[in-house]
Length: 111
Image (tube, rainbow, N blue to C red; front, side):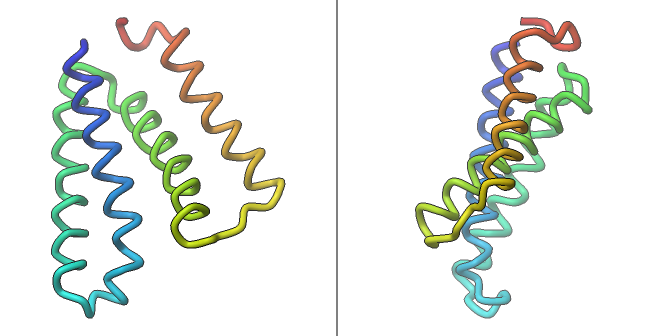
């Protein structure tokens, strides 16, 4: 099962990378940024496919998307000076709580 989590972690890192890099493509007019964005996007999908070999697709996708959303939002604040209002923060905390509940208590994935 540790491999599933390793693949999932790599998929999340790739997802976060492509989402952050997307801003630097300037509507896909900057070739280097565009290539890195596409490569990390494909990497995210590839490693997610490896994850779902042994983890239910719904759980894997929830963990991938939820963790990615939280990290991307935090990087948006740190890198692009984006603002998060109280409802956004509450929503992100709830997403993170869901990810933790799945990982700590769900019997859908074997630990």
